[in-house]
Length: 136
Image (cartoon, rainbow, N blue to C red):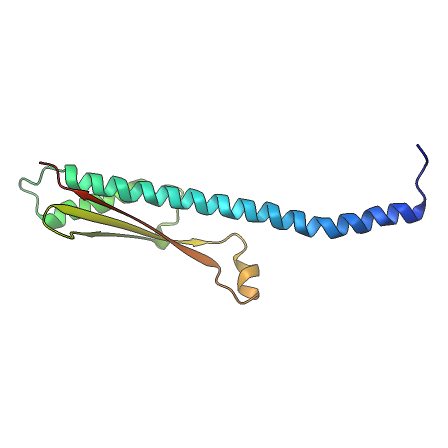
């Protein structure tokens, strides 16, 4: 193999400098999407568990507000790894036989400061809902 001249080594450095930002953009984007996917799966499971807790609780002696509070608490228990201040759990009853639990989460992006500098929002609002019919 022939030794490289100083000019060829400089060409390698220029090529590296051109490719590095693109590579970093792809890696950071992949990490960002992975974190958002984890957050969405977490709130989706939390909404489903909250709805399940609301319909499976025996209602004898427990008013609807008590059952709704238990459903919200069951949903919040499954949101480990998320920031509690950015989380909203709402329990509604579309009709007498069903319950709907909606979990909304404001996910701050890892690249928030850079996106806000460019004029964008530094967060994404994720929401998941689950509606179940009451058992029995």
